Length: 372
Image (cartoon, rainbow, N blue to C red):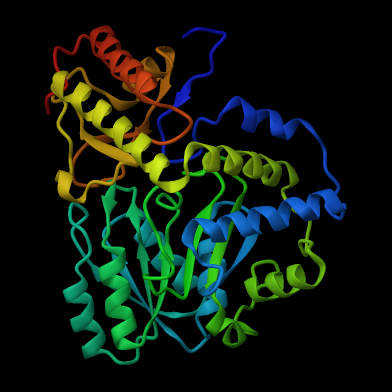
């Protein structure tokens, strides 16, 4: 690998960031300083702009990885006697079910094939059969395999049945369209180190204004209580506890670049181009995509592992890394796969380079084709 160039991260986050975003972290900030308070306010406004949510929702940032915010959202939005139904078609759905259970909420799992999208019709039937369900949790883009789940259709079913919807939009927010004016959700969660192309370290949760009063007292955690975090921020402009200052200013700079690029439509177009460049190139090497293109999100792509007996993921990973690119292991349990991300501060040139790096990796390992 060129010692003067960082390896490019072809993962669903953390991901490769721009130089401008990196440079934003070179200054130290006082968390109570008026300049930092202004940055927090600006970022919160910009996040609401992305989902057109100013009239309907508030946004609450929280320290930690995205999973911290998913857990905080469930514990804040769902009352202690609530009943959560998790739509499960992958690894991150299972994580949502586990954290809901650990939060002490009654949890039911609706299982779907990990190679298929969740089914709104099946959801509707389950809500009809069990009226005790109060909230539905779904992952918008389940990056375990890369499936894009039907957010609008699921939201419509939940609204029709009068159920709260909690959306993990970790890997879709700012790339795939999410419009709070047409999609009815109680909470939607995303994070700094995903499609906004910031660095990891904070999440944020959009909460519907109408349900805010009912969130008070639900959460049994001090640090994870989004209702308290929101109230304190509204009164003071500050975070309750030490914020990830460098992460926040990096996100502010990343959002500025996002807006300059043309916002969500432009970001989606670049990622779609990345996805097409990747899959076309990998196909020429013999690799087969795991998912049907109809449900594939242009975020991360799962490929079948090469069928050669010489293939071993750890060596494949290390050789690709030496060639300048960091891949991601597969999340599927039944068949051997690996994953390649399409997101980050990268474009068509880097995707072509990635395909070439994988071609060199196959040659180095003595594997004639990527075919499964």
